[in-house]
Image 1 (cartoon, rainbow, N blue to C red):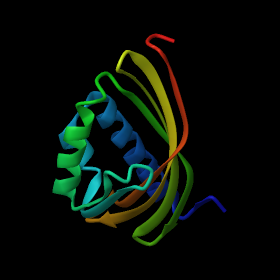
Image 2 (spheres, rainbow, N blue to C red; image 1 turned 180 degrees about the vertical axis):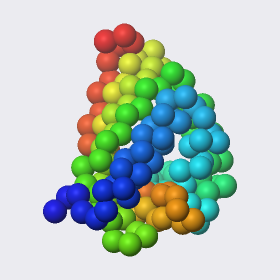
Image 3 (cartoon, helix red, strand yellow; image 1 turned 90 degrees about the vertical axis):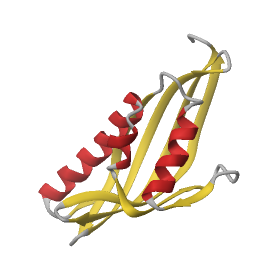
Length: 142
């Protein structure tokens, strides 16, 4: 079953995904960083030059540097599965990104496999692993 566990927790995790996406689009490092657990781990296996980053501070620092290459990004995310068991949830979510880079308009779609944790009543990402699904590059504006 792709959506299991208490409704209130599933709604809060959906809002966590939406907060993350909104912070990316607004390039708001503070709001984006707050979606991560202090002991978070972010894995990007399709980007071996980046690999896995551990710890909220290191994740935010890496993200701030990476975001310099994505001015004007529009980032969306939605869940495909949320399975809550107590204070831990396994989540699969999909992403769609549109941005201009190097004279091209780029559209990337991907999937995250996540583990979320509820600490002090708040859901955060404990681990996220991202994989590319589809990339489209076209002349700017197309």
